[in-house]
Length: 385
Length: 136
Image 1 (cartoon, each protein chain N blue to C red):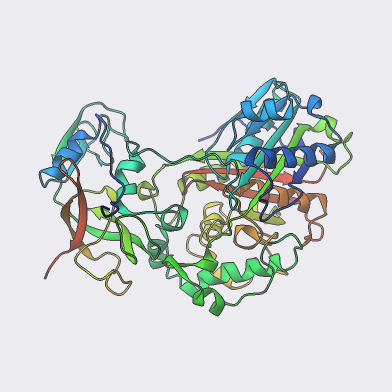
Image 2: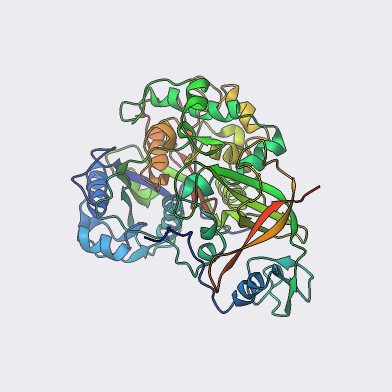
């Protein structure tokens, strides 16, 4: 399959910010978390709402966002396929800007995941396919659904619980370098395997946090990017795909089709090779996601990711720095984590991350939505075209 | 106060044959008359080739334990810990279910163990297909 792609470095990220606070924010509703992040990103880029002519968001509708922020858009995107919606927004915005549909796009995320203030809910009705063919068997959200393929993956490749625990241990090492991380104290494999059982084989420390927060990005054409106050971060390549709303219907329990399609298109459109990648973010709502991501993006042969991570190749000082903010397991996770992964990739490309990778030039940021339902991938560079 | 029950499926026109089947003690799948693919969940066309020429048939009710989690937190209608499982049927399709008739432990629940359907009546309209280990 060949698809036409936007020329690399046609579009750049010129504004990026998270909400002023992350963690528990009981004095802010969901829409205000969007706005707080958006205002911070506009300040970062030196822009006002009247300078924005395209908006994309998930959780809230683009209508609500446009009204709340006082924006009159020429272009809107309300793609809402879970936590990778923002990677997909970057892809759509890149295409829209490159084709002249709009000039300056604001992408926002905000979620009162912990405090639940002004939260929108999206529960499938009992007549939906998942309502008929999954809900009656007692799943309770992502800890019981996202984890469903893992025993099959572990048996297929001989992965141990100790290796899975190392994903959380290594990411906590990255989090310990990040003052904004929710959890910073080091943990051991024993700590992980001794933590409370949630849904076997998943214990508490193999599951993401639940916090409040938000983030926003601003994109514009690369030829305008040098006029902004911060170092531009260029979009090299992107990908997106979806598979199924029911994890029980995944084609392959050891690999995500959406990951493979999204990743392959991102790499093909970017023109880079895996060896060119300096920094990697893989959305980690649960500890197995970096394993699927490393393999499905083509960094490793199938079945080798667990020993790769346990061998400290993705840890501080390792050859492939992964989830350098601490990830959804230790940094923060409001529910749709993809925006925070994008923010860390931007920080690494700007050279301002708390755990900065020296000399990093290319970052790959890979997201998941739902329970392997959707995927989006963005590859960025800090080198001008 | 009545005991809280598990989430109740609400059939649609496209899935009614499936729920009529479970009520009668049959696990009904569909098969494409053009490409011969057996599929689930129900829909009046083939998800493999797009043909509308499809037939309903009664599956053997046999399969193997494909994957699962053992949930340790309370959910209405369930007593933790309880397994939420995916069974791969002999005919190919996989479906989510619960495993009855055996301890809800990793030791008792071995991947690839042989399972057979065990229908559990929820109410007069809805019967759920659960699975149990094949005896002997």
